[in-house]
Length: 128
Image 1 (cartoon, rainbow, N blue to C red):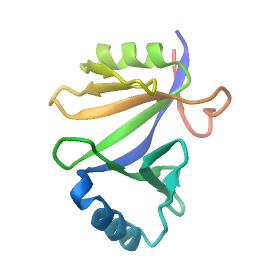
Image 2 (tube, rainbow, N blue to C red; image 1 turned 135 degrees about the horizontal axis):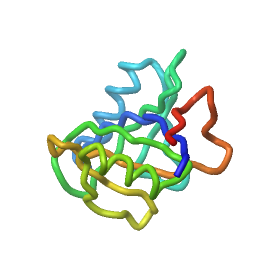
Image 3 (cartoon, rainbow, N blue to C red; image 1 turned 90 degrees about the vertical axis):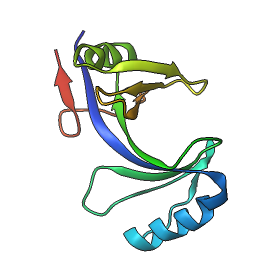
Image 4 (tube, helix red, strand yellow; image 1 turned 135 degrees about the vertical axis):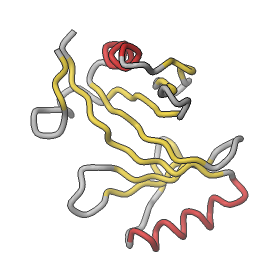
């Protein structure tokens, strides 16, 4: 099925005991405040000047520090199927409504559905 997607988010995943220091570091490193996302208070975000990419820190409930990317799409199932055909595997579906997947090397990434009309010819790729 025809749909659109884009790599949209770079996420720094950190355990709770170092989250505040990590957040402060990245705010200084990118020169921008990173306020929490209202619906997801463990996530702090900003956009970067001249970039169409969101940069976030995520407070983990468990697990080791990591970096992952998020792919945004206008058709979650079509995009997940496309990525599986490219070699990814589904890890788990979250209670918040997105897929955590693994690439062929086993690295985690997420696939999220954007609201209708968010993705267009200027900011995403059309897959047919």
